[in-house]
Image (cartoon, rainbow, N blue to C red; front, top):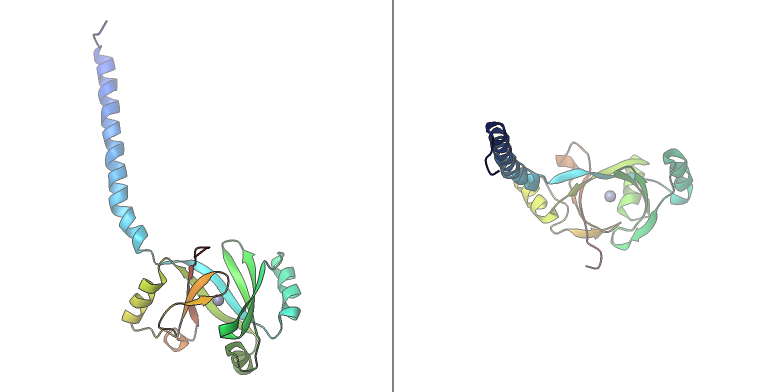
Length: 177
Ligand code: ZN
């Protein structure tokens, strides 16, 4: 009863071959895609920052606009700013209000009025991304990443090198660190 018919033999050979093809496909995918995935530095637009005169006035407006409540209000003392965050799908909106007439946001508002202040990109490794961008000739506004709002390490690029768009790099800080 150990004899295997020609038909069965063909089927066994077919499965052996297709198993081999599967292994090759997985190996190929790993060799090609893994380095690509590791090279992916800018992951997504993490948030868009909007400078406002008053959070008290702007919060209800954005809650109505986005149809979602603000999930966090946080003051960043070093920046003299109070921030409010809204989740919109995979991205966020950050409202920024100055806590001092001398703060960066107060100065921005005096010069340009309310509106889009910066675009923040989430990066995998902020230090290596800062190094890469400095190497490409972009001017960084910080030498080292600093602690920003909403659990992030951040660094800004000078807008004069980015068509007047203030770009923020941010990397999620693991909680309990
Ligand atoms: Zn921001």
